Amino acid sequence: MRIVEIREKTVSIASAITNAYIDFSKMTCSVVALMTDVVRDGKPVVGYGFNSNGRYGQGALMRERFFPRLMAANPKTLVDETGENLDPFRIWATLMANEKPGGHGERSVAVGTIDMAVWDAVAKIAEKPLYRLLADRYRGGHADDKVWVYAAGGYYYPGKDMTALQNEMKGYRDIGYQVVKMKIGAVPLNEDIRRIEAVLAVVGEGKFLAVDANGRFDLDAAIAYGEALKPYELFWYEEAGDPLDYALQAELSRHYDLPMATGENLFSHQDARNLVRHGGMRPDRDWLQFDCALSYGLVEYLRTLEMLQQYSWSTRRVVPHGGHQMSLNIAAGLHLGGNESYPGVFQPFGGFADDIEIKDGFVGLPNVPGVGFETRAELFKLMKSLSD
Image 1 (cartoon, rainbow, N blue to C red):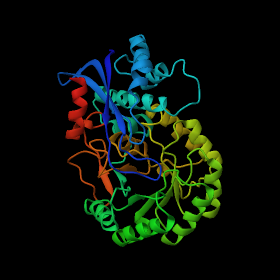
Image 2: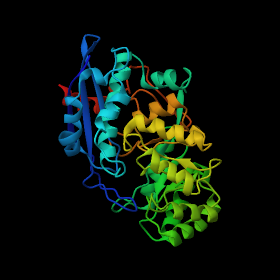
Image 3: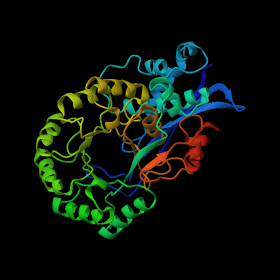
Image 4: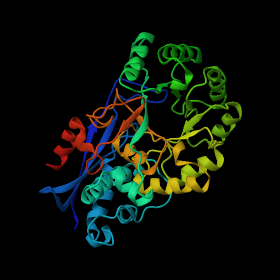
């Protein structure tokens, strides 16, 4: 068997929204189709992938470096010992051949997107949902049949008042989410507090609200926000400072004893290890948000999970960023703590299977081979156009 061709398309996911650091008016995303010569149900197997929001599409890197490297490899070096399926680890090694260590900011997204397509193809060839394949390989066959999810939103929109913010959050609660997340840090502290209190008037208690600063604060601002947030006992306080400022995160943990979350902008198991070693993160209450699609893919993510075990972190404290079906499969198959969700933005990439409802903050997974993109009609229409 072999990979016949691999294609990329850069698409817009632009929206008139901002967080504390960037606006999304020119945001793009890469979609990848990896075509094989394996036939299932009378059709060649195609694996699909895309990168999570917040990092731009990486088509140039893929086309100039990673696709040629993969297609130039001997097909026999890309399959498993049986010769009947692709080997994601061998493919990953081929993609990363002749790459120096470090410098994870952009190529990690390119490789992660390709890796998603590889795993989609692998599970389709095996005729299993990806989460079942992962559970069989790495968790003794035991998969979670549903995954806790939270609704990420609460962005800053032009002209968006408190009523609009409340209506957004009420909408998430009405469709089955319990915990919601909102952005902070783009306006003065006193205004953010008014926004937080407006959302709390909808969700009822702090345990149903998380806040995200997207790395905006210096240490003084991070501590000031932490002190102001304490009385509300929020679900978590996310990414207060720069993601690589482990000293800031560690110092903040000495002032803020309630749950915190970070990690979505760390793109290797080495960076994740530095966070665990030096960032003051506490395994009994804090949350880690590494995103496989941005961090070299599931092959690297498995290394990250292995590292966390060495530092006595439960996988249940890992809740991936990204709000997509790939992370949902990983969460169910590898026993993570949950998954982000984007029910209102970044469509058609955000969200899960069209016919599966959110119930009491949990979502199930479709029983279809692969990641399950085919169960998202609008998303699969876009993906299929790349492989037709």
